[in-house]
Image (cartoon, rainbow, N blue to C red; front, side, top):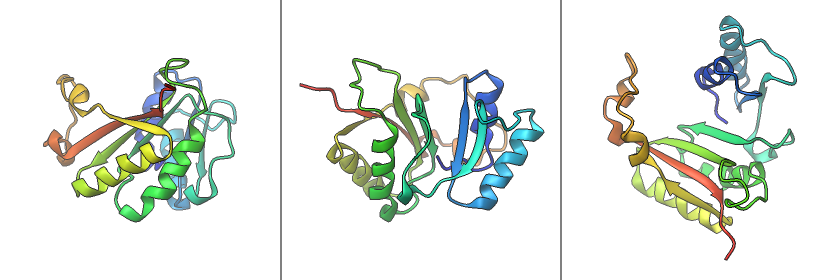
Length: 168
């Protein structure tokens, strides 16, 4: 969700993901993502890859995804309730012990800690859980990017794994 230029979609397509669906609310972004996918030989195919417009408020009507990825989605605290409802609808009713890999990973540029805190609180309020896996990701020092200023200071990026709360 929030596909941007489609970098993640291209990477997933290249490593052989069974299917990749890139979404964004802005149609120009969706079209740019589609062009980038095609330029990288990830060709549109209903069963394997697609780029489509998604308004969070309308929810998801496609197939149940195995993994949901989102980056830089918490740019405004007002999006939190709609984003959390969308995540809740995207994640199946499976418990983490039934399928520990069915989850969402949300990477957030840390602009305001209170926005992240509000997001985590809303996630729990929706019957989901949010595990901060930033440290786990930061230990992977063999990951590097060129000309990507935001990642020069890894402390400015938080990563949360979102899943259904385990039943008691």
